[in-house]
Structure formats: C-alpha cells, structure tokens
Image (cartoon, rainbow, N blue to C red; front, top):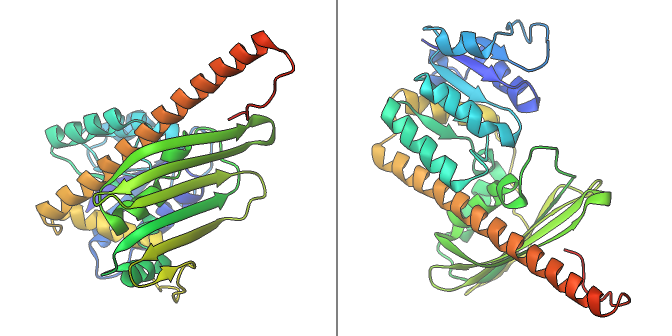
Length: 314
C-alpha cells in the first residue's frame, strides 16, 4: 500500500478524499491509502480523515503520494515541496502558471525517480470522448472553440493557463499548434475577461480559441469546426459514464505508480502537457505586449487631445 495525502480541501480535494476512501474495485487505485489532508484552514476531520501539517506529510515514511488540489498559483510550490521529499505527485491542471517552472518540475521528478501527473478530467468526459470519435479521420479546414463560464476565482492565473483544458482539447484533437496572435479584453470593475487566441495546425489550418469569463455567464463550450466533409456546430451528446471523472483519473495515476503505463505513453503525455503550457505562456506574452502598446497609444493620443477616446480598453 502507498500512503497518500490530499493538499487543499475544496471541491476537488473533497472528491479526492472520497475516492481514496472507496477506490474502484479491481484497479491499482486500491493500493492507495489516505493518511491525512492538509489545509490552511483549521478544519475538523473530513470524511473521517484527520488534518496534518505539511512538515509531517513530507517527513512521514508511510506517505508516498500527494494530491495537490489548491488554487492554481499555489501548485508550483506544492509540487516542488513534495517532489523534493521524494513523493509522487498528482496535481490539478494547470500544473504551473509558467512553462519554465513546469520543465524544472519534470526534471526534478526525474531526478528523484518519482511520478509527476497532471490531471485532465476534461479528456476523460463522455462528451469529449464522443467528440474525438466524430472528429477522427476528418481533415480540419478551420475551427473555433468558444468557452464561457463564471468569473475566475483569485489565484486562477492568466486565462490561457486557467482554461488550459480547452487548449488541451484542441491539441489532442488536431495535433501540435502554433500561436499567431492573442488579445485580451478586461473590465475589472465587472470581473469580466475575454481572451481570443489565433492558432494554426501543423498543416496551417486556422483555429480560434476564445475563453470568456464573467459573473453569471453560463458554463458552455461552443464549437464550429469546418472539415473537408462536414461542419460540426454542436457538442455531441453522450450517455453519462458509471465511473466519475476524478475516479478515472485516480485509476490512471495509480496505474502509473504501479508501472502499468508504457514509457512511450508517459513521454507523449509529458510532451503534450509541456506543449500546451508553452502555448499558454506565448498567449500571455502576446496579450501583455498588446496591453502595453495600447496603453502607450492611449497616452500619446491623450497628450494631443483629451477628447480622443476611440481606443477600446483591453
């Protein structure tokens, strides 16, 4: 048995504790046993599991695995703490808010001889699995993926990172991508943000990814994929699967710990994750350049005439 600790007890952390207490029978997840949880809050036992400190978790010999379920900006420090202690790590996406940091953490995991796993439950959803089946064999001409959702919580990071599961969809469906442009519109007073990223596939087919967040916006994925043989404008329907998404991910992660996943598959997954993080960082850089440029133009125009107001605030 491998002892596990859950770091962060929000919705995801609570589900992790539940699944570790009742793993899917007949899977490698049965080899994991939860030993405690870590929280900044002074919490009573959760589902019968006691709160422990970070110091205790990293020093205990019966704890081998950490599940990082904190806010996005805290992922990097949490991962590094447990990797340095020689513990395996499963972290919610995005792994980090920096491509460079992710590379460093992968290198550290390799040095320590432990598994670093980034959860991507959106790739495991019945809806996405059906979409992937319907896209298979078709040649993309151009496409758009527009996601809407509620306002981001503090610590979520730039939209390219906080919404990296959508970017992962596009990479998983259409292969390696390149970023050609990215813009962002923000209204902090209304907690509104919208990123529009222009991408191209390896055969130069255009894709647009829009990530839009604001209080009250419905959570939805709108697609418009034009193929050589048809056009898809709706997500396909699929029956709900009997095994929950986090449990499916737990089975995948525990399979890695048990050595059931071939090295070439581990390499492909690592390459995909780093590719997506690199794309997200490029989008962030382009948006920062655009904001600086627009800010300079606004100042320049204001110095000529205080009544010039044609520039849209982005």
